[in-house]
Length: 311
Ligand code: G3H
Ligand code: 13P
Ligand code: ZN
Image (cartoon, rainbow, N blue to C red):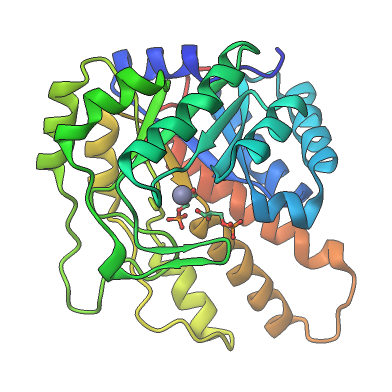
């Protein structure tokens, strides 16, 4: 199996009423934890790389780690640029072997978003690469850009057909109440997603794959562990798993998860050092961190996304 784009994965996911997990990768242990989990449950995967991840780990290192994962697992894996914000960044990832890119023009005007997205689609499609666009703005933090609640905006269903028709994107990220990071709802607030907006979008774009960003559940077990072992993450709240299951059964074919991986890894490392304060071999604390990621991802693939057995 070689690297694949997202076309076939999304077609099967839409028809099957499940979603593909898109997990952010930044280093070897994260790639291994995710891909070992997917291999055990025979799930297709999207491994996504942000501009920040590329800056941290280097494009070539990440590509080679993902190629190694394909050799080790034999799974269909797409390597995807997460939140590309310029044509040049998308082009660099396409030229460097990515099979899918996101061009996030959601901070531009509708017309500018269309023009930028179309330029990326034209370049990508000529090279067999699929493209995700975005309409609507999520609150939270991406790289160094912090979108405040006031600047966040739900996707307007009235705009989606024109956007898809004029750009030719293969999938569309929408804003229905999810947000990036570990603080998605205020304490005391009941978590809520705008499924009415998703339904309207689904009616206007039949058989079209929708993407949900900011979809970590902020698993309480890991937040409690972080707080127990010297961390301070009061009031971290994520998206309830039943809401993600519902989205996956609808038009949502790609669910983005990064914060949950970070929390699992950090909780595990904090626990390790609390229990073994004199240890200093990185393999000793990275091995349990990798195992924590593997368990977390396995649970997501089976119990939330429903893509186990679909590779
Ligand atoms: O949406 C943002 C992702 O969690 C990536 O985060 O830009 O800090 O790598 P990053
Ligand atoms: P989380 O912060 O909820 O994990 O979202 C990740 C994401 O959307 C990456 O694009
Ligand atoms: Zn995102």
